[in-house]
Image (cartoon, rainbow, N blue to C red; front, side, top):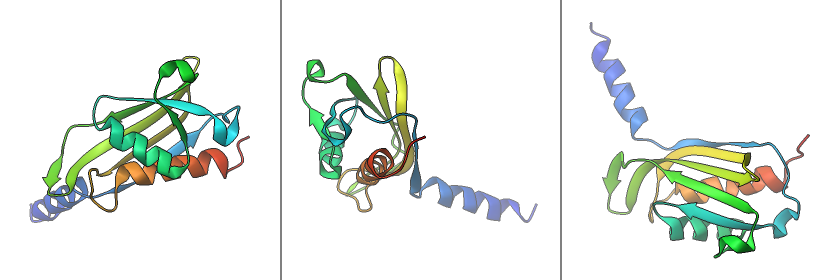
Amino acid sequence: MKLFPIILLGFIISGCSQIKPEVEVVDKLPQGRETPIYVTAARQKEECKQALRQAGFRIVDRIEESERLLRVTIGIDQDVKACGKLNNVKFQLRFEGRTVAEANGKGWTGTCQPNILTDMSHDLWRKLFEAQIQ
């Protein structure tokens, strides 16, 4: 019974902290770094597109310009501070109905630093273009 407060405190602290993104890549992009990607997101779409562009992705504004779709899912707000919100985030890069790459993380959005959208964009870029895919 004495361990309950310690376990509860650990759960609360871990619930409010950034989790390093995990990225899995299944297939290479056919045009490499020049592959156009269309982004869809219900929340913070412009912030997602900006982070992806800064990481080096070629983001297009019309779905007709790309066969690749990056679906961004931002979960419910778990905490709020002046610079942004704490969220679970998922990037799912899709082509012809299948997932070719996926990234999952948890962290602060908005203008907060570190920023999970920026971190995930850079990690996805590295996994797609700097790692060998078998």
